[in-house]
Image (cartoon, rainbow, N blue to C red):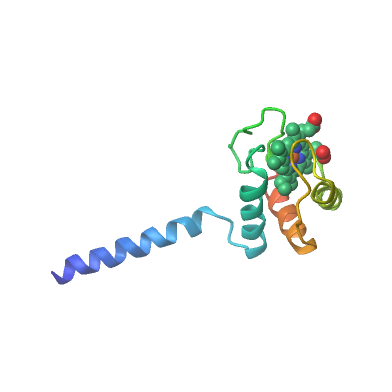
Length: 110
Ligand code: HEC
């Protein structure tokens, strides 16, 4: 009985640890990833290996290669303020824009 309980506790602990391992460890990156999933994933592939649902929208991995960190942050500020394509303007704070930028840049292939 006791050993069964131990196994259960270990199984639960492992189950909780897995999602943390799969995501980026940095809180800013995690925040950026969450915004990307909530706001951008409707059209863009926002994770490595994820295809865009809107075929015209570049995957974030590709965007990461096109911009450097400074130009991407500027571009994302514009996109948030003005919207783009069918995406209406989004009230994304300056800090969240930075997190989103850091997340997209973290996808860049070396
Ligand atoms: C309704 C669909 C849609 C949503 C939602 C959307 N996008 Fe896009 N986005 C597009 C399309 C379509 C393009 C391709 C435009 C082109 O290159 O012709 C694009 C292009 C881009 C580009 C590269 C081209 C450029 O204008 O600099 C960036 C960067 C970008 N999107 C960021 C974002 C971010 C960040 C979000 C979430 C906050 C987001 N998009 C949400 C449709 C969308």
